Image (cartoon, rainbow, N blue to C red; front, top):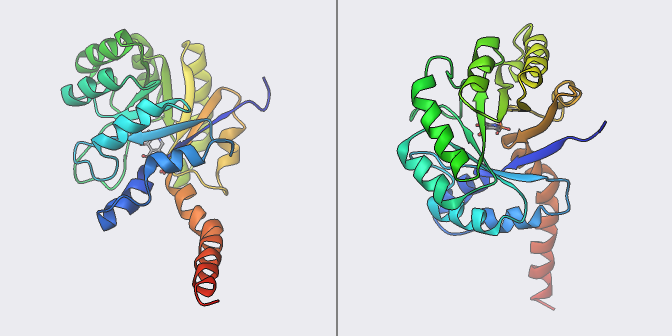
Length: 239
Ligand code: PXP
């Protein structure tokens, strides 16, 4: 259907902000619920090994809520597979994870890790979870995704977002190959108001996952309203 494309909203950085003060505001579950009716089609959370943003209790609460499909980003570790199969999110997106990285820096090397990834994918699928693999737009990686049983591929748009020459063409070819291989095509990383449209225009891409920019942009659009309410309460207290 033309025009039909889903937006998965990554709320990891709501947790980053919450953790900066060690309290429970802003609460990722409360924000997820508040996004119903805004155009958000799914919630994405990444439970990292170091729990630097989303924590176990967040993942538990958001998966139990499931007011919209939950996309659970995870490393292919035994610990994360055990958590995902217990929480049963709608989907799991396997990403590479290095402790020192600021964010997910590159795609998963599926072609080089077939033997370790295939059993993790099988366990997730057995639990009824739709499995996605986050990969760079490279044909050998996409073919490996199909071979080891992934249902979805999420194309890493980070290099495109950083302005790498020729990357949009690589993404277009990858999107076409993804659907040819019988896989559903998603994309994400580094997307903004300024660069989203060439990706969203690709008919094969049925879902975009976007986080950091939206949270930053929300400060610009949301802070004026929050300040107005604070000032209103202050003035009201003195009437
Ligand atoms: N998709 C995946 C697999 C990711 O790891 C991330 C970052 O956590 C995103 C999408 C969202 O990227 P960004 O926060 O840059 O929008």
